[in-house]
Image (cartoon, rainbow, N blue to C red; front, side, top):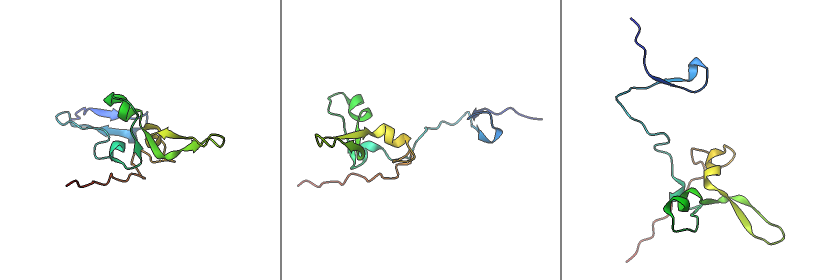
Length: 102
């Protein structure tokens, strides 16, 4: 007897089916490094916590205006989506260094 198991499908290919246990929960991207804890992350200048992190930028990626000298940094979210940059795995992630206070 065949039992229909719940699954997530990523496209039409049978090889992309992932069976799920309906009694367990999972969090996508769990265990991946967070940009906000990286030394290259620049939080957005705002008092709004949502925008502070979601509109943050990365010191590693951007471009420099050759006239003004101003550097415009890439949004961290975009860097994590690009395999040519940090990617979802955080290839260039470096944790913040903890500073001890007396």
